[in-house]
Length: 398
Image (cartoon, rainbow, N blue to C red; front, side, top):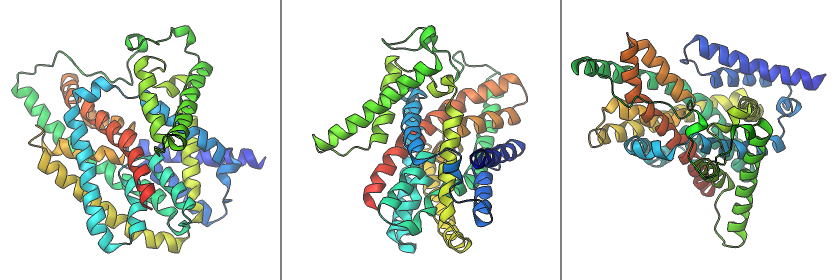
């Protein structure tokens, strides 16, 4: 009975977070609400191992991280990345701006380990936060374990409204441009690869629909993850080249998707994406069990200062590079800010803002045609690719 009760509690916290986020039109991030509930629970009567009791053990998480990274590869289209190369460059250079300010001014204010522990979750997503947390534990830096998780939870509180504001400015400009050009819609209106059917999926290994069952999709994803892990071990032991298995999982996921071995949005088609994400979130939030009110009161100052430095670095890089890359500074900054959320938050925010600002369906289509591809590939480049690589590099700097 205690296991079912623990599972119910975890799902209840997840639901409340999602409900608040939906009711506030994503201005209040679900992860922030859920993390706050976990924090209050740990500070009162909730057991510290509630995640493990709910079935989300370290073994489960080890499997989940590998197959989720393979899955991220199936969300990516190399064609879209190439077409939107300017958005990719802006996003990555915005992240570089964050590193410059945090690793210079940040290290003048805080110690090296504090900055190294906090920056990857600032410029990446959930997986990045988990990798840094596990790295801190392995290094025995237990006093900093709560820092990456708290950064992951907190940065979205500032990031989401800021992204929304930048997109509102850009959408307003685009609507004026649309009317100035005679209300003409582009012929090649954007269609998200996440929503596209697999019938046009490229690759010599594209499988017929009858083979796209949940079990077979999961088996193929697990095979790619296992192959990636084996390749990482081989490179380390035989070639003496230390490349993190998580990075290889992502790369192999992209390759398998391009070859047609894995479907678009594979885990969603298998119907298990949310289950795995809830498990990963529960495990991450359970790391907050080591945080006391006094510790949290101390690290919140570090988090706020580093977020301000990080966002300032992003803004400066975006503002300087916007004109050379043919974008407004608002659009460039919004692309860089995708590092704070990634998919699906970038997709949801872009859609919601366009729907709010546009007065007609044609206006909305025109706006989304210009903003959605840039936001999606920006998120893929930063959160899906760069954050995993960045986390791997920063782990070596601890």
